[in-house]
Image 1 (cartoon, one colour):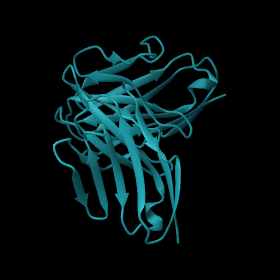
Image 2: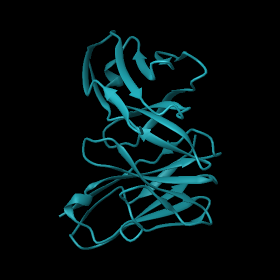
Image 3: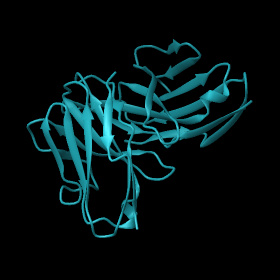
Image 4: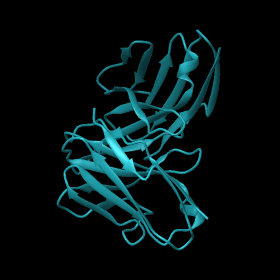
Length: 114
Length: 114
């Protein structure tokens, strides 16, 4: 498995502002993923972040709204830009250590936008 | 084609009973089927997973049954305990240009009565 931490664990933000969420892994990993989980809902993949290349976004998600950085093999950030109340969700990062199938999730960041 | 349908949405089981959660998929390219357990305020935790070359996998009280021809798989929790009360997600994945991306089911909220 992998030990994954996320910061902040939760935040309350004003409409129109941006929040950057950090994801730190205890060991080097190839792939990192960012998910959104709306209240009481399932998980939806936002993008895949591979170190050294641009993030790959899923349909319905764009880089201007959710810019992602992946500066090294243990760290990634997701920014939620120009937030609206519809962005209120739990944002989760996960890692795929060896390009295998198993993904391990961080504890999530609970975002509330007023 | 890319959906994973999960049922039931919620489930109440008596302590010691069997909890059964079902998932169905359409995409025959899926080749890895994990189940995740999520407690409130926590990230999903990998519970058990199966590949389509086997029909059943058991780990402790948790069993996955897999029916490749029907494109269905299910999670059985034997001797269910109050501590099993959580939300369970099935998922399916396949290799997409070298990355295994997950498609999650809609989740099942399990409550085990003491």
